[in-house]
Image (tube, rainbow, N blue to C red; front, side, top):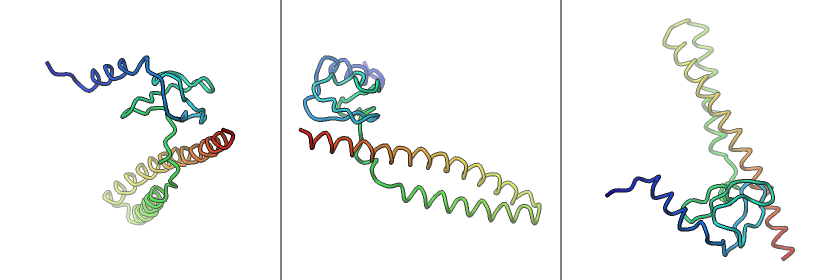
Length: 140
């Protein structure tokens, strides 16, 4: 008998369902300290669903998101410059190849801008949560 990944996740969640968090883990939405709460539950502060089970960590504050997304900004800028260049060439020549390239890069640039927007939102939220966590730890 073979179990798929969904079944393994469900079994792991069942194992941790009645256990309590022993360390200091913070809500990914508001920064609330989830210490002594169940591994799989809802944040009492903001209502965010979380899963603090090791290897899952969904809805939990992730300090790696504090890293500023320089690479995403650079990729978006380069794609934007390529989009402008291809669009100018497509308008000037009205060649089908340039039009296809221009449309492709317009779509790609829009997708990258939307992704960058969400990534910057996560970055600023992580900074805010890190400040709250630091303030909570200073009060302890």
